[in-house]
Image (cartoon, rainbow, N blue to C red; front, side, top):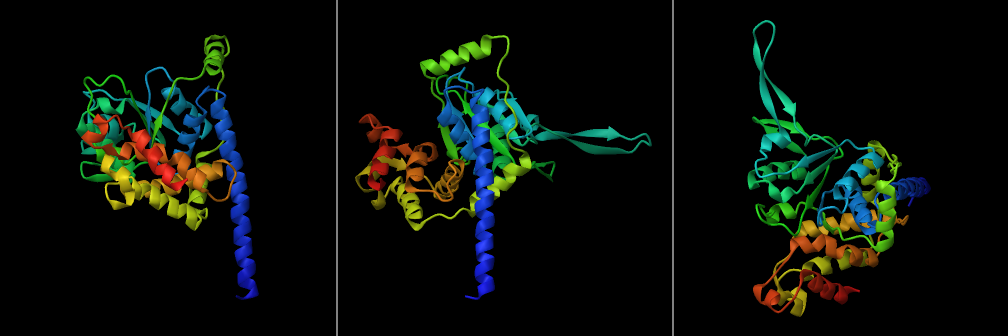
Length: 336
């Protein structure tokens, strides 16, 4: 190889290393800034940041009162994004999300339609209790999530960049809800389970939120820096052993011979989009930890949130007391 080519390659590698170090510092500052407001949910915050660094969407599942809404608002401020919130209800219409056209008349008497954008035209959208809206309304959001644009009256309107949806769902109250179809669930990079905080975190929360001065989040990144970070995530190298672990993990989570005895418990499993999600997420996790390449530990750590909403067990397996989490743990044991 020519000397100039070698030098050029070395300069490119140095640029990527410097960019990764700067981006990792920004990402860690963002995680710390969110942590000053959201107490006792370190893993939830980390997974939410990984989702956004990966350029995707996440489904937050937890009972009311666990700061899911506050998390999204805080992340909007910390990451410098235009954040909006939609409260999903059974009577919510697609136009309430996407926007609508109104007929206007000019002073000269000429009539024309003008598009009024809906709340979906935000960089960070919180879809609160998404399963309370009708399938028609859910599908309107689905197009924006997958295609990064919406179509109103035959006209295409692009959503802002970056564009992320953090949707919430209450796992307890299912009356009057419309369960998300598998096609829409697959659009979420991961399902993030939000659990109760521990005693010390809840104690800190009590003093912070009921006192005279409540902690306020501060910006740690700009939207432009976030877009640059997302581009960098896609450039991080992934070793062959990590790629093989991703493929083995996802393919073992499907019915078929590759899953061995575990496959008999699975009714349907994740498609290739799960492999893509895991490939991006392990890179983002490595970058968030200040590493330049992901490891197999990253794959094992992110396996459950990325796979659990993309799988279903057979009736016999559920009757025997098997759970999705238990099955994923068995699959991880074959890799780790």
